[in-house]
Image (cartoon, rainbow, N blue to C red; front, side, top):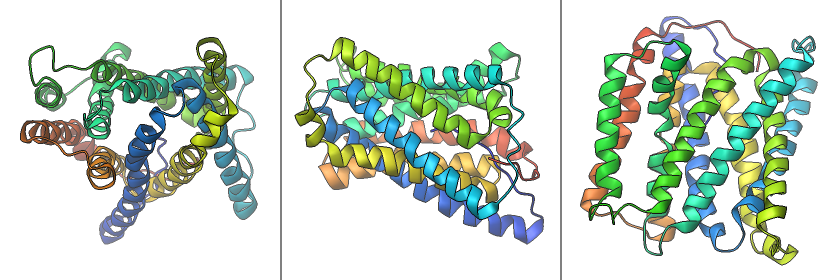
Length: 325
């Protein structure tokens, strides 16, 4: 998922305790996001991708808006983002919404086209999580250095992807795998855009705006490419839409904000990396989709690469003062 950093400074044992507290909160959010892959898979055969993502995005915007209203009433703090220029607000919100639209629709489409019997939750979860490795690579284009550890993580990740996805040569590579990788690429670009505009617009406002933009774009695409959509389709997946909108977007996002106020950036990102693990466990326990030994080794390598890619940040991270979100 996407990282809006809100860090609070702590020293010594307090820092350790806060990291533990933040990690627990973030792991709960990761659990919600991981199980979302099971929910998406369940909805894939019942509703078209664009319609599904349009509805969940609008519901997500409403859920985060409710959180924003409640937070402002409790804190009664002056809005520090009132002076944000309209240009920055519209450009940042639109760009984030466009790439969110790309990533979530590629992901849902990819889940939809996996053949029956393929552990789509695990494959989708681990391939999508490659955005953690892709972010520092793409950062090169904006003149940010990438350490040797990250490059090693890239090699390990692609070895893992090969074991996970390529069982019988090129015939073992599914269209869903390709779409998931493109989703991870879109997620990586999205994260870099969020990193640029989050402090300017504010994390919560940016989230609401991007959900609205994503909902509008997905809705337009649904009207154009999914003319056979009916209200009956929506009724069939109402529980899934509610989960994705309220739990995955609203509750998990709120947990992310709260958790990252306590955990340092590297600790937070490692905690949220468990999303892919929970996706695999959810697919196994709930759906019964198991992994072969080869696929299990592939997943382990990808997860190891995800953690390794964040080591430079973990080593260099210093506690920062709290930032508004």
